[in-house]
Image (tube, helix red, strand yellow):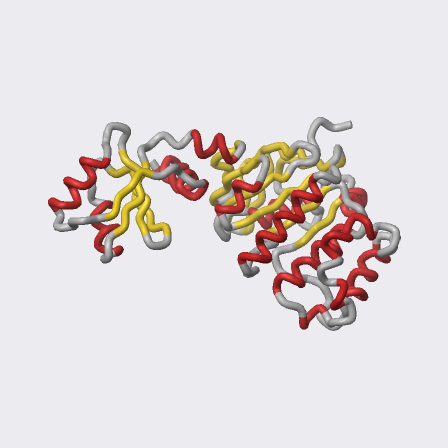
Length: 306
């Protein structure tokens, strides 16, 4: 048996002048939730299409459950459940018809594997006769996940499954993933939402086809080495542009209604307030904060650009 559920070695893929994947390597342990975190265009979908045998790599190799994704593509398609970023089920079929169709493709039935999808499907079963095209975003998401699971896959590949879904449905979805993990299913999931990274066992931060860091969410946050402050002021644009001229600031980025500013190691609150007051910004709201995954991602991006 392989040591890892997924093993990726030196994977590269280009589309004309664009390098979608640049020498990507990492492993995913069995029965874990592994997050691939990065913005649009960072290479997440290209990687997932290679893993699911829908795209050939230019170089490197990848295996899932010990099977080469190129040489053993027929087996890969049997042991993998894939949920692409865009809803790809049949709009004119009902909920039940979509599920039955995917079960039939894989030579099984809804009844045979119902226990695997029960906790998910039971939420949309009252609407089993509704056409898929008439479902809400959250219900489409649950149906797509049920269809990806109906053949009892060993690996679940989810490409930005919560994009465009409301906050409540996003939370419910991640609760479902935790339960699936307990059934010995390996889950690799991509997302542009940095807050979802903390829900994974391990996280790979990816930008422009390159892996910036692979760690547990806690270790990624602990590796952040700069004092970090959250600062708010009525004129946010002026605050941001001013902080970016501060010689002691490593970076300054807007987070909602405040600015997160990372400082050189020996710089503290007193120095920041003094600088801002000299620039005419008085009575700012300022407090130290712990870095989140997005702070760490931005910091790693700064390091790659130095």
